[in-house]
Amino acid sequence: MALSNSQYNAIMRDYERRQIDNRHDREKRVEEIYRRIPAIREIDSAVGARAVERARQLLEGDEGAKARLKKELEELGEQRTALLEAYGYPKDYMEMRYVCPDCRDTGYVNGEKCHCFKRAQMKLLYAQSNIDDIIRKENFSTFSYDCFDNVQVVPAIGKTVAQYMKEVAARCRQFVRQFGSERGNILFTGNTGVGKTFLSNCIAKELIDQYYSVIYLSAGDLFDLFSKNRFEARAEEEIRDSCQSVLTCDLLIIDDLGTEVNNSFTSSQLFYCINDRLNSGRSTIISTNLSLNMMRDSYTDRVTSRIVSGYQVIPLYGEDLRRRRLRG
Ligand SMILES: [Zn+2]
Image (tube, rainbow, N blue to C red; front, side):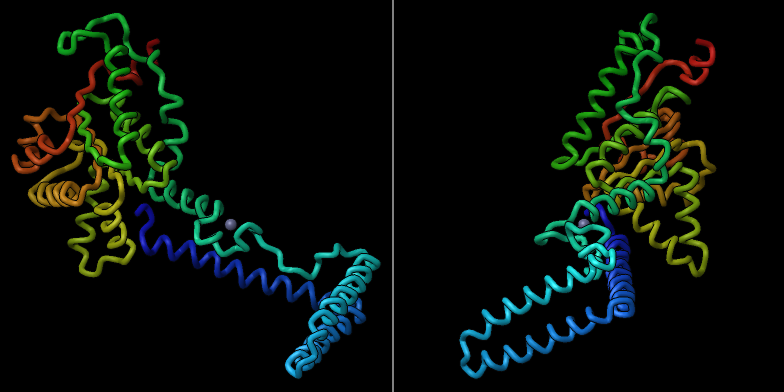
């Protein structure tokens, strides 16, 4: 499930607030009309009185009472509308008004989430991802092969970086396509600026747009979060919630592994996180500029073998795109 319980409750609380506001809003308009057009107040109380009267007759066996009531209500309704319009009000001025008339601000239509619920959910998912702004700029639709070298053949892969990146992008799209049935994991390796973060942003946007929950954290921020949760005697609820989301979101992106200060604590936390997510079938994308051997030195063999066995490793090549762009 893409939304956590507390997120779901937050959205539903908004609907409840909206419904209360709607009722207050309507009451205010009704009071205003009663003040300005007292005849309408009389009509409204006549409606009530007639209904009670006809219901009593119906109970006493007067079969015609129902039809009479219907006709009377129609007539009173017409008088009411005529009065409202004569005073320059729209005829639905005293009715309930909804922000979303489709679901009447309940969030659901026939047991299905309304489009307004889905929009609220999407907004939350974007905000939660930590890359709300950046993925609007960095995604598959802005991904361009022009910025990769298409002249020099890289010996390790026997093709140019531009040719290779087309294959990599295809693998990333495949990752997204099969996400519903098969949750994969990716380790991007390569130097700074070869497109690791950009590719994970592309994947993130596609998945959030399909209502999956995605959380992006640099390795440094991830370990900060874990250590706050572990060492601050009374970790705030927000921190505990964040840690929980890191473990349970549909896709976790750990960026720049290897740039943070690491120690045996970070190593064991990383193992816990990676292992837990693999065991529960949740996807993780890690990017690092460490080689696998360097990873082994930094985070123990245990972490590295878990990654190698459970992830597709995608090495990226080429020079720093930012520098290349500046020159070009
Ligand atoms: Zn709605």
